[in-house]
Length: 391
Image (tube, rainbow, N blue to C red):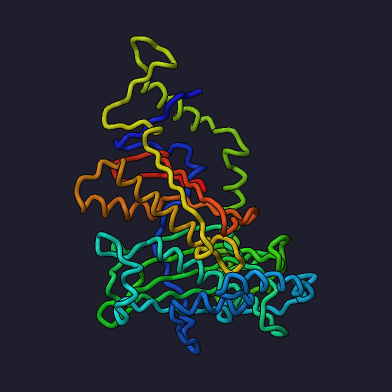
């Protein structure tokens, strides 16, 4: 067994690439679905979600409301064919974050580098993704939805801007782009206002799953019917994304042994740290411009108060994403040999692409619990830091 791992700031090979998230491949212009849709203020997204599931902002009333959701079981479909099909335009939503026109909102989103906190953006994307899915699965016979929509994973976030300005309005748009039996892929886009024109900032893909009112079993969702060649291509890419996720899961190191190339890479790293004078497993030498992986590790501990709960009385997934990202950003600054503010900004931008933020829907976290985060590097190069956060 290897007693210690090491990271280097020199250019490194793709070490254990199957355990890492994919990188960006460019921004894709979304189809225009804005006609007939009025934008929603960002502060109204959570209130709409509470109304859809019948949740309350009051703690005691909220517990009772969640208990009453059990009666909504009778509204669940027995099979997907019983649900009316929907179009992509049916779930389209626009959300405005008026950082320019409403300066009182900036304090919550501002970071120390006079830019926007990306962790807050992750929170807003998570809430928007859930609202989009509830819009797609809207139940005509009841004001309250019998479904519990939860975030399964953040599949991809592509950034095309290095800086998000804290004094310019932001617009989020999104819609359901692919549907399985009980899962939905949501495409979301972020734009920022410059010279009276919204320019693209990021393109995000989230995967949501539908469960019963008590969040215990899967539930069927409305099928999606693409209209026109553009939507058919988007839907086809959703199918390919599903296949890619299955292949990625199948090739996980938790299920398969490392390949010959991966074993060779790890062994070469081990050989580079051996002390040639002793040739012992216990005697290791740190290569120049390197740091032991054990030393490149941070932990965070959060007391989870009811304020951080979601509409189902569990810890808000966006809150976990923000905490994981900010912990990754902190370790990048602590162990990235960063001396100048310009360099820090570069590493902040890189971490946004590469940090892995796992979120499990099988064991939702209670809003009265302790959240322990562990963050460590996988590898470093001259331009990138790869880290993984475990919650």
